[in-house]
Amino acid sequence: MIKSYQGFNLPLALLLLIAAALLLLLPDFAYAHGMSEQEKQSIIEGGNLRYMWLGATHMLSGYDHLAFVFGIIFFLTSLRDIAKYVTAFTLGHSVTLIFATFNAIQLNYFLIDAVIALSVCYIAFANLDGFRKYLNINPPNMLAMILGLGLIHGFGLSTRLQDLPLSQDELLLNIISFNVGIELGQFTALALMLLVIATFRHSHFFQTFSTFTNYALMIVGSLLFLMQMHGYEHTANAQEFAAVTSQGQTLEQDSKPAAINSDVQSQPVWKESISIIIPARGEKEYKLLLQQDATLHYAWQTDGEALFYDFHGDKANDSSGFFQSFAKKTDSQSSGSLRASFTGNHGWYWKNYSAKPVSITLRVNGDYQRNDTDSVIPVVPAVKIKTTHDSL
Image (cartoon, rainbow, N blue to C red; front, side):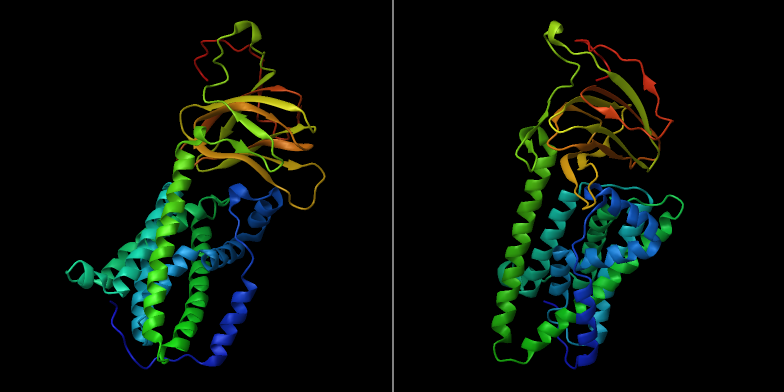
């Protein structure tokens, strides 16, 4: 259990100021692969201040990170010790946030968040003196554990940051700006947590409040762990789950490449084959205009490297920011068909986390209209699907 100290107090005026700042930072945080085109463009145009804002709002909406910080400071009452433990956590997550993002180290965010959920359970278990009571051992050094768990939290923050449209020319500044925002958000949340704890600290039922809160943190951490593992199972075995649009129409996602078909006579002819290059650590979108109820058949494959992709659509002439995602995954290929539930642009957002360019071959057929604006994307002559096609 973290040692308790006496003599901590914060000016009420400062708490009220921080509370007001928190209210201004409440809008939901959305990640780049789930953003509308307008939102992604606003990040690019907003520069480093925009990344700082996103870092602050992400921390304030990151309940797993906040639950961990809440557990850290639960029994601390002096500014010196609060600063010591929180600085250890800040140092840990800042190191991996900067290092992993700058070096494009991308881990599965469901697995990282599952470990972060377990860290919430750990800190609550330590607060309940569980190592001595239930394991009959002395607890590990808390400062060292907080530093180590902070390193893991940093990987979680990095996976979110790498989903944003980072500027290759100002990559380090983007990372630092996001991290500064993280720390501002953490400081704001920390002050409010201390206010809540201070409210109960001198009451006669603080011990009951302490026990109940830390058991609640363990339950919350366990539930978050199960949720993240379910999410990991969903992405790792995506073929077992049907992707259904909000209009109730099913996205038909083939478990085999579209080129494999035993009935040669019924095989369609690909209308076009399109080559797309995703630059190293870059991103690109390619979309086709579909009228409502039009059908698109597609199959794409990289030259070997797996890419994160978001297959999505947005309505034509819509200014509300409507954005409908049909499938998200990291893979080197995908194939299937889609019947459009609305008129608008439908296509793919690809993100390349590797240090080399990745080539994509996209084959399409159906009732669509190309709206290319990038002349560097060449059109390859149409090819007929073969039963023994090697590339798909």
